[in-house]
Image (tube, rainbow, N blue to C red; front, side):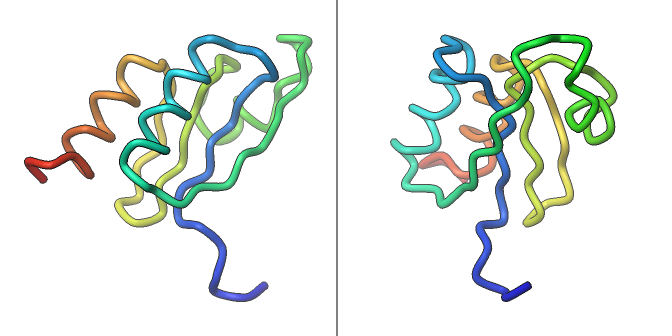
Length: 87
């Protein structure tokens, strides 16, 4: 795999307001990221559980910092602190 993959991967659901909130912050910050759409059935989201320990979305993996997290509020706060104007 080539090295031009975005460092941030966002695990998300179609039409999920919490996911959209994270997408908005990523876009506002001009951050390059890759979207991985997960299974709508909560019980089928093993890929998310493997990376974040939970089946909830949104979840992000940031290879720049080695951070993996879920919960939109935490992710937004993390993105603001890590990539916001003050960073």
